[in-house]
Image 1 (cartoon, rainbow, N blue to C red):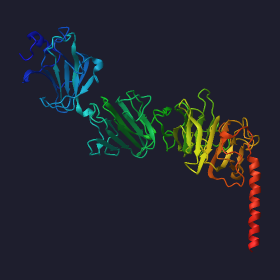
Image 2 (image 1 turned 135 degrees about the vertical axis):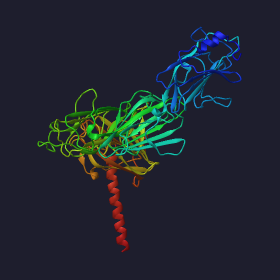
Image 3 (image 1 turned 90 degrees about the vertical axis):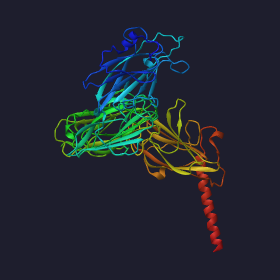
Image 4 (image 1 turned 180 degrees about the vertical axis):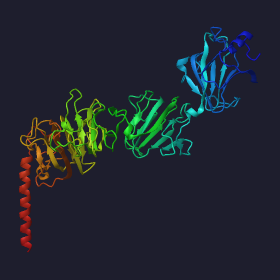
Length: 623
């Protein structure tokens, strides 16, 4: 008897299954074979280990029982475990085990390598459902003869079915030849289908690690593409996607500049719609995560057939940057719709939007300086707690770029009732989540809690000449924002600051609630009486300031509600050529709040005049 400790009744119980049983046959020394073959009928059947239905525990000493599931041509085997209870690992080895062969043909031999070696409980399984690569799948069951092992384990049971393999074939054209990558393309035309499906590599089996796939969709002019993920099983957390895990990126064009979706994890995602007739999907696997991947459908649709469900919530984790456009962009948008886009940045960071196209319908009452409430409009909200419009745009003038006050911002598009919008093509804007406040120079400071600060250091040892700006320049700088620019020169240097295109606050008193820029040679807080603050609209010559030492600070304070564009600053570190030594060499050695800048300026002027007189005298003497 091959199975040494099994009596006839136990062996018979293995084959009293409520499924179609083909044969029991000896295929080699030490194995009994149980074969389940496709009947061509739909539906699932069950399988189980010996004694599962007739006794409490499976027997010991099973040398080998081979369960073989054989499908017809173009069929895939699907098995799902309903219960699994084998002896757990001992010293990292399975005394009782079930081996799975997913990639074999109709036979298994001594050279066959299993994909999985299973033991323990359901929670120990890498997954509950497995698929064959071809038309057959095999399971090899063994139990140890060791009498010291606890024999209180039930075994396993599950269901199996044979499914049409054509259901897992992508309808796109494969264009890559590299076996480690895959690239698919589908271009809609009169001779192609308007819908189809695409899958992760090896689907429905688990996708391989360190694999990349691209899927390019090209519609006809006036069409958009919609994709829907029917199955999604990736590693990672859907609420905090990152590129260290398996992920999918969806872009609204042929290149990777306008991402509209960043997907990971296993949560369902809504249907994704392109804004034009191009769409790109990129899949990247990182590690051996034992995940099934994805199954998705695509469909080309006329841009006029789309139901306008345009509102979206966009988080920094799901989509750190991308493009938003009006419905049917760049065609005439429909009337009587409202689209709301809420942006959520990480704590301490800002949302920045930049319009690249703006062309809304203008009624007969439209005036460029009139009230946009009676027109199709785009409004921006900066406070999540109060549903109040911060600024509203209408007409066809391109708005300046905009930045949130905190980590939330809302953009709302309102198209008033009326079917014919003329030649109005809508709007398009790019969005970014920014740590740097839109200031791209200098070294940014970070608070102890990890949040970015609007404080930037400019060191002479790194760069002698450069630029700095207010937040979001050349757009409106955000309200209720304080920024600090610190300049550190080498010993014997001074820094010259010039603020071009200066537009900060209102004219008048440059302090308190009025937006203003102040200057100081001190490292500590407090006014520097040697440098008066400035505000309003000013020429570059008036904004020029020269430090009286190697250390200098510029501070910008705002309270106004998005009315001004700030400045483009220039700085230059240069040697101090003064006849008299500087009164203050460094901020750390200074005391009090009085700056000597005014006195130094007078001395500088006197020195220049004296040098000029001496030079003229020498020239006259020579002549």
